[in-house]
Structures are given as C-alpha cells and as structure tokens.
Image (cartoon, rainbow over all chains, first blue to last red; front, side, top):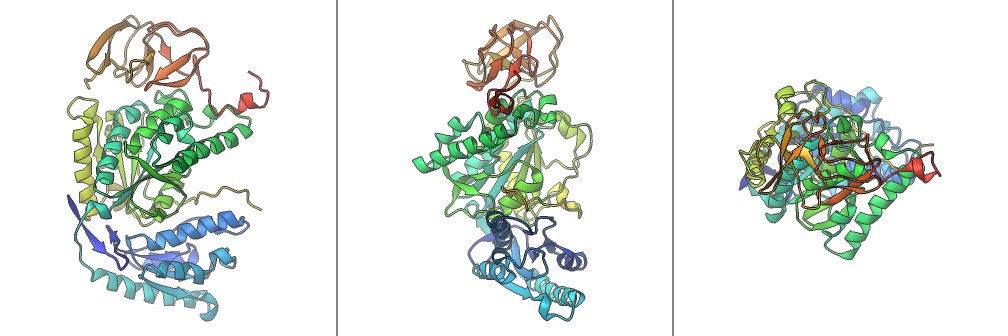
Length: 395
Length: 102
C-alpha cells in the first residue's frame, strides 16, 4: 500500500508539486495568472481590523499552507493590507516556512521600483522555482506519510448510513498504517460529543472535545435562535435529517473508530500522527484550507446530496494546495453529478459491498489520487475563495 | 444491507430510516442487523426519512443510533413519519434560552 510522492527536505511527502505565492491579493494573482503550477489563496481575510487572535489564525494558515508537503517552494511578498501587524509581517511568515528547509523567496515591495516591478520580479522568480520543482521525481512512500482531512456536507440519510462510515473505515486504515487524519466541524458534534469524548487518548483530550461543543452551543444560544433554523441547513432537512443531534450522530461516523490524539485549532499542525479533531467551522469555503494548513495533502468532501436541486457540483478546492475529492453514497446524487464525484459508496446501501469492502476500494482511489491521478474537480482552473475561520468580531 | 425497507441501527431505536419511498398502508420490512420486523405505514414517507417503529409519547426521547436525537413534540404513532413537525431538537435552543416564546 504505497503511493508515489515528492520527498521534501523536512521528510514530508507531497502528492502535488506547487509553488505557492502568499499572501493572496493583486500581486500574487498576477504571478499565478501567468506561471504554471503556482497557487495562491484567494481570500478577503487580510487581518486588517482583526484582533490579535484572529491575525494569528491568518498567519498560522499562511505559514501552514507554505509548509504543506504539496508545496515545493514559496514566494512571500509584503503587499497586503494586514502585513504591517507583527503577526503578519512577511519576514515572520517567510522565516517560519523556511524553517521546514524549503526554499522561500521574499519580495519586499517597498524595495522594488513599484508594485508592477514587484510583480515582474515575482513572475521571474516563480518561473525559476517551478522549473526547479519540476526536476523532482515521484518515489514510492507508505501511508504513514499521508494526511487526509474530511468534511461531510449536504448531509442526508445516506451520509450517516454509508457515506460517513466508509470514510471512517478509510480513516481507520490510514491511522492503523501510522498516517494522519483530520475531522472537525464544531457545531456538528453537538449532541454527539459524549460519544466522541470517550475516544480521547487522555482526559485532556476528552475535556477539550466537551469544551468545544459547550462553547459552540453557548454561542449558538446567545443568538436567541433555535439552531435548527440555522444548522441542520435546509438541504439537510430536505434530505431527511430532523435535528442537529441527528446530524451530529451521523456526522461523527466519518471519524472512524481510532482514538483521538488531540483537539487542534484551525490550521494548527499536529505534534504527532493519528486521528485529530479540529475546532473548525463546517463551510467548505473555510474548512479545507485549515486542513491543508494543518498538513493535509488531500481533502475529501463526503456528500449526501438529498437536498440538492440538480446542479452539477463544480465546487472546486478551497484547500489552495491540497486537491479535493468528492464522495457520495447517494445514487441520486451520483446521477446528478457524475462529472464531479470521484468515489461512490452507495454500493453499501445496495448490498454489493460491506463498509469494510467499500473502505478498501476508497483507499485504492485515495492512493491513485495521491500518486498523481487528478480528482475530477482538479481539472477545473476556477478556485472558490477561502474564508479563514476567525472567531472574533471585526473592528 | 439490502435495498428497500427500513433500517434501525440499535435495539434502543424507536425510529427506522426508510430506504425507498413508501405509500400509506404499505408493509415495511424493518431491519436491525439480521432481525427483520414488519410495520404498517400510516402515511407516505420518502427515501431517507424516518418512520416510528413504536408509539412515542409527547415529551419522550426520539432515539436513533442508540442515542437521543431530540424530543417528540406531540404523540407519535407507530408507522408515522417522524420529522420536524413532530420532533424538536433539545440542543442549541437559543429560542428557549432567552426565556423564549415556546
């Protein structure tokens, strides 16, 4: 059970081979428009007018994306609305990424003749860096080098019965092989936190899982609204889910059965391997970039789809540097979006596969994608914007 | 798992998940592992929605996956659809927290 990946200087293994340009914005987008195999983050979250906690989250996300194994080298520039805050200084971000041993080039816009001059310098640098990255060859590595993050969405009954349990089986296989797996969505553990908390490897992990659920529920209550009018979202209710508790109890199946090693902040890198819960928000516009910043090379959207209205699912990866794959267990969803879904686990409901058998097939698909096969939405160049998960009000 | 019928996940469950659209008066095979029982439906229930496998009194827990998924907001008869019209969440109830209207 090996995949073909790119070895990095810190011992991590990329499944893609990109040059990353950060922070996002005009300069980065102009470089990426012109130069192949470059990526940048498209986001309005620059840090301007944000608390130090939120600025640190943005910095952690940018640094984490830069350190992601799928990134060969990084260009950091100083032309960003937030880059004068200490947390977001380009020198700090560049230094922390460079500590992984990968090449980081800093463009100090104030030292270039103009913004356009900085763009020209960036384009030349990026061309040189992708050329350098392209000389690297894939080699076989075992699963212990793989980290995967999952979100379930448009959840319906098939999610809890087959879709999420098959992801859970994949997670168990990855964790057993000493790999790393991330799940999260703090609202979608409310009503199921007592079940998850028992799986903490120690009392601190257990306490933190319960604390995340309690904090999230308190914030929800402070709105004065019944959370059912917010989450489960209308498509969940149209798909047969009646309450948040029901959604949560189905959702946690995607974590499998392994012990939970820790609770991470959005974009935080784990200290070890194994299964981690991430305190994050369910939106696909937010969650995947956080997993990639935590080190995931691949992200999975496990789709219910009962409430879908018939559109093809051309939602592309917001994980910036990590490819997104789509799975579903709902035959109607598969029929609606065959050009987007990479793996179908409805065979479990149809009686063709056990969860175990479908999990084995999913692992093979994951290994193929890790070895370079594109996910279906990776064939599309458009990228949705990323919403970094910030917790404080803005001023 | 077999297509069609309805699925229970735990012996404590008082609802089962319908695996193909059913009409009122239909007999539904309810599976719990290898055990199979029959329930007559009282109304149409679409794929993916829940059917009560026993009578559930107003105020009682509605149980799926062996855990409470909320509270019955009125008496529910065996064979009825269980959804937002007769099942309320117990968690994240900001509407009740403020001394609420309900």
